[in-house]
Image (cartoon, rainbow over all chains, first blue to last red; front, side, top):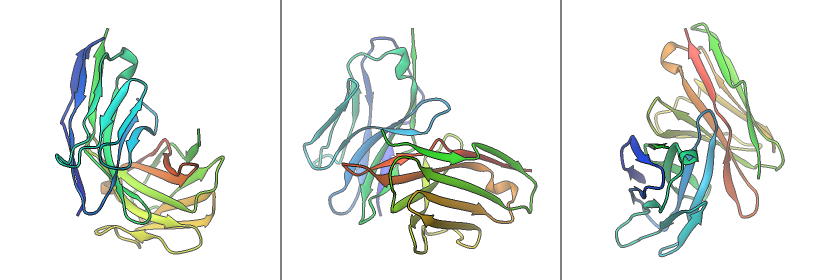
Length: 112
Length: 115
């Protein structure tokens, strides 16, 4: 079946540091890949997505590239801000209803 | 962007009682809604896929008689935890599929504590 393996946290960085959160997946067929973010006390929000191999999703300075050869979708940001502190979930979507399979989530804390 | 609400946001109940959680898509119609359960420091686990006007599709290991799902309209799905027990305590999150391009929009979640 489908599965998502995500870098375990928590991750603590200083402001303006470079961020990488690793995500690899196992899936049949051609899934879509997503990064969701959950700010404290809020629901999940879609951060970015990629629907096919070599696609790059980007939003708010975050980027992730759909790498079929390495089955990866690592999240990166060149310079994090305190406001980026949140839990980040990698997910893949498949099936006719596009059910989502989530990774375990990575808690990011950015210190001023 | 599209908004999905959940009610209540938090509920405490006694063991043996039933609890209903509502999930509403506020500004779009959702033929498909999903219910997830999130354990502390764990990922979201899909419980069931809810389709308007038909029976929900439950994931393996989820008791359909325990977790009753009703999707009576294009903007409302409900999850009822029947005869709740302390092990049912968790964070329940719904999502609704809709918009252009089609995306899953998540509700803020409902914290259930069964005493």
